[in-house]
Length: 140
Image (spheres, rainbow, N blue to C red):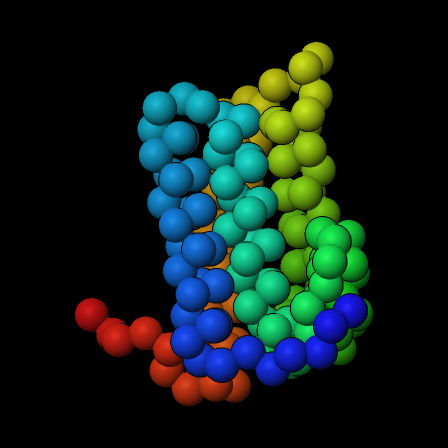
């Protein structure tokens, strides 16, 4: 674990990356690339939770450490709903299948659920950060 309090510019950059991954997941869903939806959805969520942790001065060198810290710091403390960690775990597992398992494919239903959960999580992280750090993006 590294301790580093992220600046608003860093938080914006991290959240932009999360939003880019969501946009890619949406395009992949429309194109029928369901494994890529699962992968991009996970990374969108990962970048969003990483931004929340960075705002608290926490960065980690592995995905497992990042997910575990988010659960410990933000879910178990009831800052985020109890089912948030289950969603993160499922997103991680679906990404593992999509990226590394040659015997199993991600189907459309799974891809749609992954995208919906990632969109919810990115939005929840953005709302949390705006409560903590102030408005990060211009409202359109």
